[in-house]
Length: 347
Image (cartoon, rainbow, N blue to C red; front, side, top):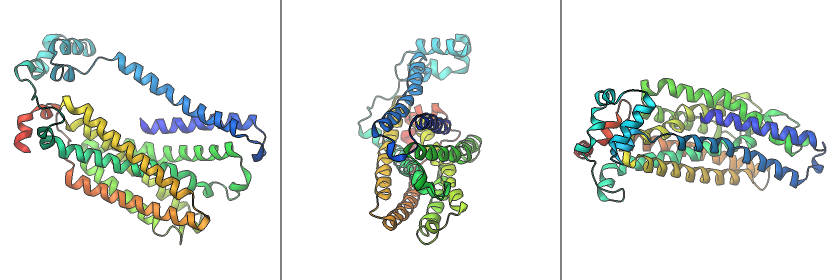
C-alpha cells in the first residue's frame, strides 16, 4: 500500500498547489513566503488524516490470538478473540490450533530481550534486518528527493524561467505520480506475485544488485553524458531503481522481521529495524541536501554524480549483508519461531 500512499501524496500536492497557484498572481516575484508556508503545512497536515484513521481502526481490533496466548499467556481470551473474528466455534479452534490452546503446558522461555541468550539466538537476525532496512532507506528516500533535481530539465527546456513556486511543486508532484504509476506500484505487485515463488532473500539480493547496476550506469557517466543530454533513457533507468526497490528490499525488509522472531520479541525487533531505516532515511536526506546545494552548476553536477555512485555502493553493501546474514523465511511457520529449543540447537 505504500505505493498507493505515494501516489495519493502526489495527488494531494497537485490539488493544493493548483488551488494556491490559481489564487496567486502569475508573477513569481509576487508569491509570498507566507502563502507558500500555508500550502506546505496544509499538505503535511492532510497526510496525518489517514495515519489517525489507521491508528483508530487498529486500536479497535483485538490483539492477535498468538500474541495473547504466547506472550500474555491468556489462552481463554485468545480463543474468544479467534471465535469472534473467525466466526468459528471453540471446538473448531482446538482442532485447528492445538498448540495454541495447550500453550500453558509449554511456557515460553523466560530470557529477556536484553540478555546474552537473546543475542546468541537472535542477534544475527536482528543485525541483518536492521542493517538492510537502514541501507535500503538511505537509497530509497534520497532517490525520491533527487527526483526534483534530476528530472526537472526533462519536463520543459524553458522550465527555470517560466514557473513560480507553486508550478514548480506541481511539476515535481506530476513527475512523482508518473514514476509511482510506472515503477513503484508495479514493483510492489511483482513482489506480491513472486515472493512465495522466489523467496524473500533472493528477491532482496536481486533488488540490491539491479539497483547497484543502474546507479553505476547513470552515476559514472553522469557529467560526461547524462548531464549534457535530455535522453529519455536516463528517466527509464532512474525509474527502474524504484521498480527494483519495491520488487526488492523496500518490500522484503518490512516482511522478514515480521516472520523471523518469536511473538514476544517480534514487535520490538520489527520496531528496531524500522527505526534503523529511518536513520538511513535521515542520512540519505542529508546526502541529497549536500548534492543539491553546489556552489555552481558544475559543482552541483559533480555532487550528483558522486551521490549516485555512492548509492550504488550502498546497494552493494546491502547485497553483501543479505547474502552473509539474512535467512530465508519462505514457508517458515510462525510456530517454528516459538520453538526456542529448536532455535538453540540451530544457533
